[in-house]
Length: 225
Ligand SMILES: Nc1ncnc2c1ncn2[C@@H]1O[C@H](COP(=O)(O)OP(=O)(O)O)[C@@H](O)[C@H]1O
Ligand SMILES: [Mg+2]
Image (tube, rainbow, N blue to C red; front, side):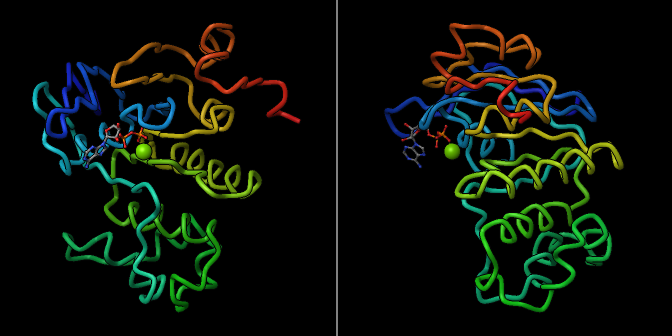
């Protein structure tokens, strides 16, 4: 198992954000985590990366995990190249070549300040910065937030290639369920701190009660147009 989250509880003071969540990601697997605002998605990924300490439960990780944080969190006054290097601050080798090979669009803007980039380019930098850690598992919190659909789809293609070329597992948190389900073969639906559904994305997408409640009327046919 790449990631094994077992009966996780996260609290902020008296408020319970996660109430007994279990979730697994196998090596090389593409898994989506979807659910409405405030469901606890970010709390879950922050518990996985150690930013939030669980009140109960266990998080087991075998290998390196890197997180693309919600809202990207660029250093706007630093260059793209320096932002990438910050992703490898733990490492002695901080060679950005492999990242530019995977995300060639960044090569052109590598000397530019991050705050001069478009939202899509910034998200690409955030992904690249996480890849500098050469992770076995990449956790992406809200990939498409604020991006045009075509840009978001392009980023998803990069994740698919990363997975195919390097076998990197991905846990993708995404509001655009159609986009997440295109990439991922398995998904979890989180609502009010609990997993309310899980399974193959094909089956979840076809479940009428899920579609109405959580999947924003997602229609697999439409996303293929
Ligand atoms: N630092 C925090 N302090 C207090 N409450 C928080 C904090 N972070 C998140 N919450 C609350 O925990 C719940 C889950 O939030 P979050 O994990 O950000 O959900 P999501 O990412 O699915 O939108 C929400 O009710 C949110 O208001
Ligand atoms: Mg969130």
